[in-house]
Image (cartoon, rainbow, N blue to C red; front, side, top):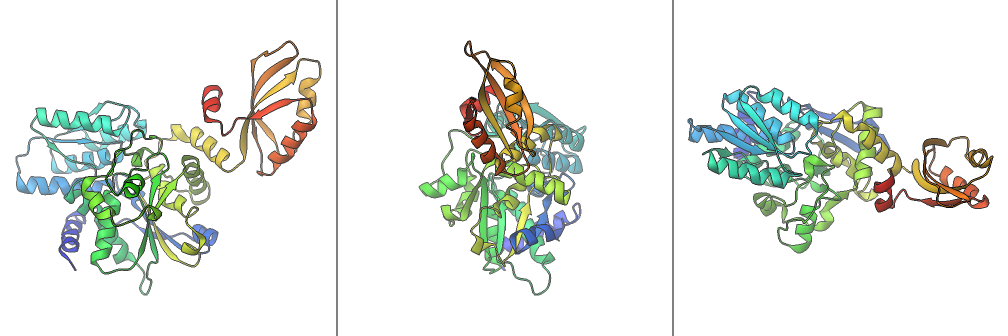
Length: 418
């Protein structure tokens, strides 16, 4: 065992006084679906519903051990680190200030208030993590506080690495893992677990999963240099980071772009709905990344293998559920949007309805404008039971006198009219 593994054990002993180990659960559903042996490390079942409490608690404990009179702790977060930070501040009886983006789901804001009351204040600023992080650092410097980073610090990495220690302690006797699938945002979790497994001398393969629209690790590995993305999509808010952590990239730079899976947002939504409907597990988008990756790995890396997916968080705001369901249906090929032109004559609508199949359902029907004397434009949303039904519908459209265009994947038009 190396020094890093020794330090992880020490931090884990500290955490064990306030946190129970999260379960390592076998998933029969996912195992049957992928013809493999799939286990889930349920970090969504910590008191703050994510693994982030591990790093925050470890950091504040070590800071107070060095300076018991530290007057103020500060952090920036898209939500999960904030909750872990608030939980730790309240445990140690120390005041804290959290900076969160204005786009943070309300559920995460309310839970942060609950965990930190009455010691932790919340300030909402900016459109994403990087805006909030800049404001937090400026506030910290002006108020003689101590910044508790969300991922880019050796002690934070040690705290997150305790997930890996628990996985090994919970592994059934005689079972050896072929692969661990780890979500990546700032990289603290993946850096910690991969380094811990390496020091333990394990040959387990790793797959690292990022949101398709926030690929900071992937792009950095491609360039062989830590890059900052010009733009990220904040939908997968728990992993939408413009730049991988410097400390974390030191460890993760040994991987290649081929080791990173980029998960499409709509696919992640489909996985969230699947796990909710079938397994009864509530996941936030970042929490679904590792499970979603099972659908994107080559079959020879999954079939017949023993795999752990780290489920990183379950802080889901159910006000987002309609959008998640909508994205999931489109990704599964069960919902499409069209702009059609109906002739302006009696019976045209009735004729149109006769084109629909028995499994087709109109989810939206909205006149956009009367585009010409003889035609009117309609925004049409159709849901169906099987993706192949849409080809039958398209054939029916073509045989009719309807002019139509599928705008489902036309982002510019869809964002404007839907």
